[in-house]
Length: 148
Image (tube, rainbow, N blue to C red; front, side, top):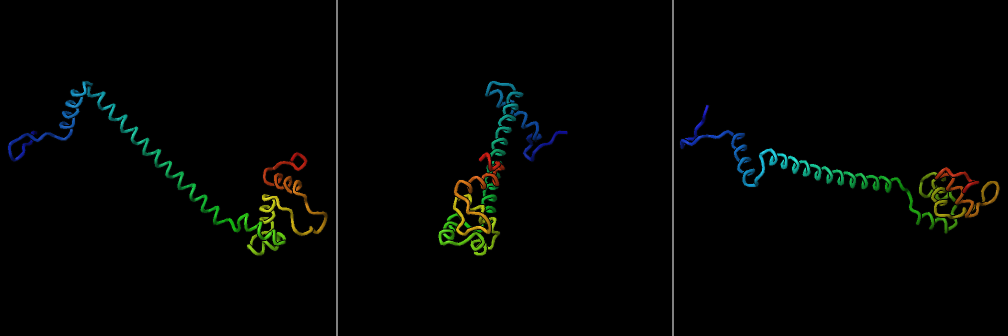
């Protein structure tokens, strides 16, 4: 059933109007309506891919910021602080009590910075820097000490 406006003009349904507009645009570009619609779909897909890529990039940036914040919040002391207390002559246990962490955490950080222990162990001798490096690599990377 046809519909008319108050002024007597024919009301063209939206889909028919869109089809007429597509035919006119295709005629101006000298292509078929099918090609016109395909090119619109491709442009739409490209746009959505670009938006998706931007969202993924934003998500990656947010993830990196979260990881950095968590890592910083878990770190109880910096290498510089450790070196400062080590230079004052404190043992791993004493440094650990200052920072309220486990002495193994201090040992790992001290080994990473290649600082030899200040106090003699209960048994044996202090490790040299080379022995310390070998033990640290063995613990961190699973490299047997005789291969390091």
